[in-house]
Image 1 (cartoon, rainbow, N blue to C red):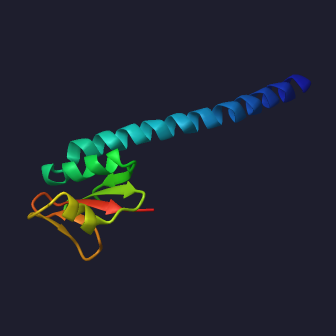
Image 2 (cartoon, rainbow, N blue to C red):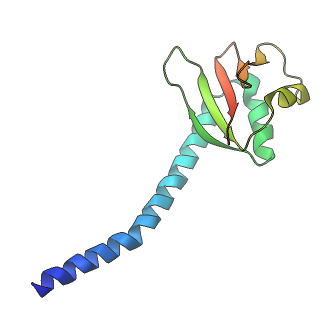
Image 3 (spheres, helix red, strand yellow):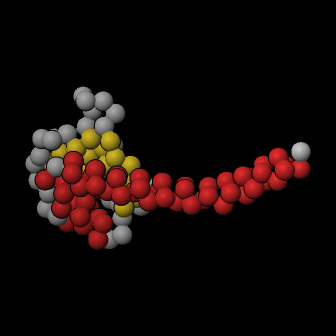
Length: 116
C-alpha cells in the first residue's frame, strides 16, 4: 500500500512540474503558427499595415475565418486606430475603414481588427 501511495505522489509531483512547461510550449507554438498563418494569408493591400504595426510592437493574437462567406479576420493587439493607420500609409481602394472601425480589403475580403 505504501508503495502505491509513493508512486501516486511521485506522479502528482511530475505532473505539477511538467504542466507549466507544457503550457508554455503550447503557447509559443500557437504564437508561431498564428504569425505564420497571418503572414501567409494576409492580402498584399494590408501587408504593409501589418508590418508597420509589428514594427511598433503590436502582435497578432488571433486569426481565422469563421466561414467561407466571411472575411479573414486578423486580430492585432494592442489597440490601434485603423483610420489613422490608413491615412498614414495612404491606403486607397480596395482598402477602407469599416463602420466597425476595422481596416478592410474589399478585393480579398481580409480585415485587420484592433483588440485589447
